[in-house]
Image (cartoon, rainbow, N blue to C red; front, side, top):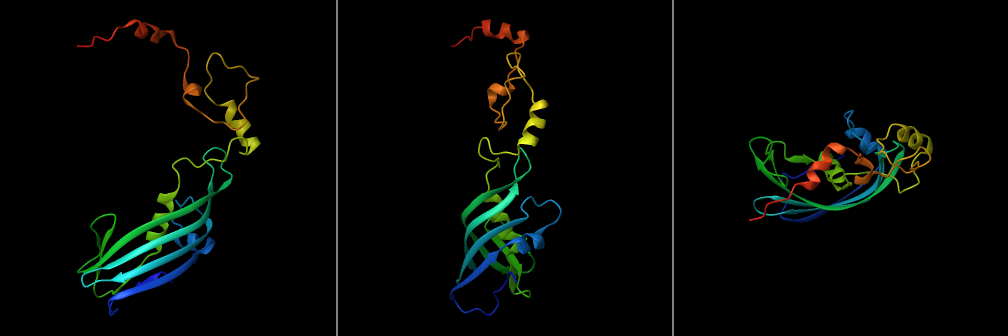
Length: 186
């Protein structure tokens, strides 16, 4: 379904369209996949030149992935453009992030894994719900185990668990002596 035949194509441009949904992510699932479902539109423009095939990917839609804080699903918008250069050779290899060599006798490329990588790489490193919208039960359980400074009280519960650098600082008199050290600048 995601194979694009390359051998025998005349020079010029072609366009392929795909709708990615839960069945696409089930096809990719190797047990480590965080994204299990989505609704994405993909447009692939293929341009054959005399020495290579240039594929341009335009991917738009949304995916569902677990929130890094509460583990409930969160919808994240995806809008990404990527490029891939495909050349024929003796055996499969990836010369760089954008250049792939495929065996000439195969004559086609399966783009499913590339689509998945483009989607995953477009997601933010930190995938969390907006403040105050995380699962309340999970938030309260995690707050019980959150590191607290000496100034925190039990009444000061942060429902959305937004951690910043001040949450991680603890009062520790062992570091006080460092404040008295003068930096010798030449």
